[in-house]
Image 1: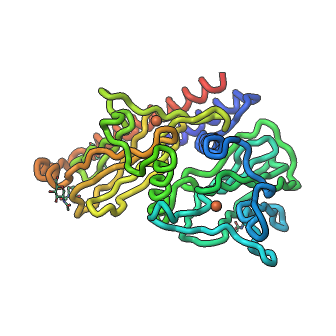
Image 2: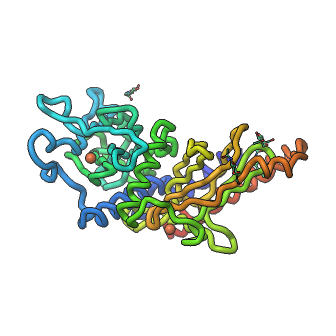
Length: 357
Ligand SMILES: *[C@@H]1O[C@H](CO)[C@@H](O)[C@H](O)[C@H]1NC(C)=O
Ligand SMILES: *[C@@H]1O[C@H](CO)[C@@H](O)[C@H](O)[C@H]1NC(C)=O
Ligand SMILES: *[C@@H]1O[C@H](CO)[C@@H](O)[C@H](O)[C@H]1NC(C)=O
Ligand SMILES: *[C@@H]1O[C@H](CO)[C@@H](O)[C@H](O)[C@H]1NC(C)=O
Ligand SMILES: [Fe+2]
Ligand SMILES: [Fe+2]
């Protein structure tokens, strides 16, 4: 119920603000786009995406270039990275690995409309193999589509713009991927972690994660609850909470916690989550504690400041001192859940208002 009220409030505030420079429903896609541009500049000394002219020699030339085609009925479009369907062509390799020196894949594919808005983005699972590809619906009001691909090793690439045959529509609310399209599927987690270690090495000279002694504000702290769940907060009230600054227009530089993941004593993943900076002021997540869990350790990636590991938490010792888990707390929890939702809703609306006024 509240959710519908919340969505209605957001839609209304966006509608009444038509004509603003950006009209995104969520900041997650433009934030990732702005970060790809930032990385392109940092790693390749120009923020301009590569084109086929940058593709090297011979068969490899087209390997990174995304190619967009529209379905015959005009309803869907497909992006594929490389030209492996042509004679002597090559697909971009999708090499899943937990080894930072081996992992190599197209991590994201996205598409922009005629106004440069990101209207679709998806994270890929390197275990799915080649080619790196997506297929989705052509949104209404979109007349042109331009495909982009991001390779973890070789940066941002753009392909040819294609006309959709659609008709222009002003004052559109730009919907991009749903948040599930930007979550990594479980099969991708080891590769994602390996690539963060690789980036840590390339950017900071060591693949060792930073710790609390480097910056408390970047440290993920786990709190285990007595109902089988745990929460993570990045930073602390005393030491500072890490900001979650997205990019509303895809240009302004974002600074946020992009991923949080939790491992056990054997470095097995418990969970990995991609964080959406839209309307939130802190990086936080909840997860279920597995039944046989002993010690849990959380890691985060800050898009600017890299990989951090938090203090390991011993679940077993917390459980034994916490035997009297209550069963009459259900209603209380439901109430606090709706309070959280209401405050999330009002902060989303507040952010929308401040961004557009
Ligand atoms: C293509 O679009 C149609 C509707 O126009 C849809 O039913 C179909 O599932 C789409 N195909 C893919 C692969 O997404
Ligand atoms: C578990 O307990 C925590 C802390 O009391 C609460 O925030 C959370 O909503 C609870 N989760 C469930 C699934 O009951
Ligand atoms: C800790 O307690 C929770 C909730 O009762 C339970 O789900 C979990 O399995 C326990 N963990 C351990 C290590 O005993
Ligand atoms: C969990 O950590 C404690 C030290 O805090 C250690 O003694 C224990 O062996 C660890 N458990 C496992 C399964 O590694
Ligand atoms: Fe590559
Ligand atoms: Fe940071």
